[in-house]
Length: 494
Ligand code: ADP
Image (cartoon, rainbow, N blue to C red; front, side, top):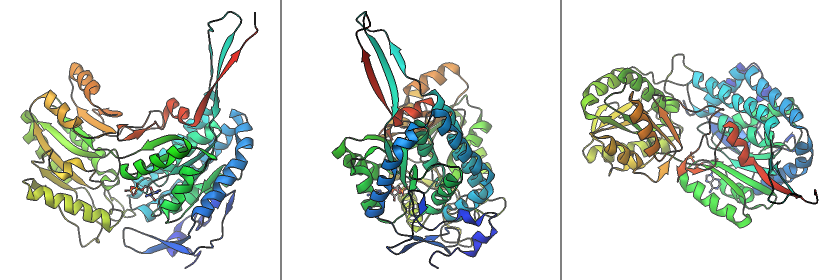
């Protein structure tokens, strides 16, 4: 099936969006090192064979990005902005096809995939605007004959490694800001989902983004590619989204050349329901924050804490709302939860759940695979009596399992929530304005949803504290991660 397209892609309006090899210096490369298989998690079928790239291709991509940097950073902000706007428009024009490719390789419901495409494109249009506002500063100098000027300049070549759970948006959140700032970009997408990344490369060409500005290196030897992207001295900035252990390794590798680094790592999100909350809203917020992408996002709720006076009422409403969620292949109409990404994900969740049940947690809903659908379809699950010492409370579950505990006081809820080395997203529901500010200030998290379960958008700074990472993506702050400040001291003015 080398360089052939599975017949499922013949249903696309634009077949040319499907590519099977790395995109370097404006060209899709012919493979020299064999191929790796990309499978559909819904049915295990082979979707595509993609050309293997390794350290050599990663170096070639860095060379291409280095060569393209002077030209791209030398354009005016308005010129870069226009190309990014075109890229974003093309994504929306091909939203249906991009969503279909995404669902096929990743598994999420088609509606969610379409949402991811518009979410990803929104970062490109947002940063196309921000490119024009990369303002510097003029600072009063301590001497009368001096002027202090501060310029913001593109940092240089940016390298990125991205995960499979948002195969489109995790790339665009980084690339949009990098390209807007004037940087050039090399990404290694997750080996499970390379097709969405390659479709973006096709659209970059059509948008007139010059050769070498956006490069995609696809391969299964993540370690070898990662060594190049984190250690090559021509790479000025490295940006990673993925698991905390891999992030720590890559952060250490970046130390050898003192790169600027952004890390979007794992979380262990708490969701607190206070006794003054709007319970119906809290249930809806929890479903949105938990079951999106079958629970496979770093901002998905991991631990639910419910205050005792509303515990029974909340649980009853939650079970009623969760039970009918439709588990199905992502392309099936009405699907709300798709398959998990692979067998390792199923095994991990099963192990965590079994341990919790052995230690006294109670299973109220789900808890198993729906074998009629296939080996990766995990039922929406609710367990109660979950305690802080259980592995399931300390591990990012990355699956459709809700872990519920009861609490009594506000202080207790805050202490339980902060009892983790990570600090990405957190959520709470309350209608008491004093409590809202007290709790928001006390939670050690980079992002807090207050009476809201879906918090990420291009205008807001996404990122975590503690072991959840470094830096912010999106918002006007997001551009700073791709710029250097340059201080000019202009003397002799007296
Ligand atoms: P996940 O659990 O979401 O798969 P990972 O951190 O394992 O998270 O993977 C995220 C990205 O990091 C993927 O693109 C993967 O290929 C890459 N990756 C995994 N291990 C390494 C490594 N040792 N060096 C470089 N990249 C890696």
